[in-house]
Length: 126
View (spheres, one colour):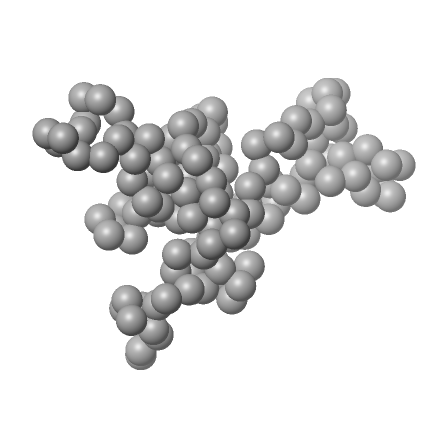
């Protein structure tokens, strides 16, 4: 997942958490076609929230956090599912911060970190 999305190795923990989140919602032979999530909660999992890890996402900025006539969306990278929150986790490479939001538009065809150049273990925009 890291290699395909071109995210730096610092995101391996987010990738692992996302992998476990998805695996727990996949049927398994050990559970006779049911999912681990289903065994734990007793309900079938909703998978409509699943997205392609590392893809481009445009995250909605709340009105009270916007500046002037600036955009109401910010371009981020989808990095996982927020535990204990209704929403997704995103990384904003420009501001170098993590965001949790339940309002975003995903473009699963593009991986914004693919234009990075790796030098000495660090990523810089090329």
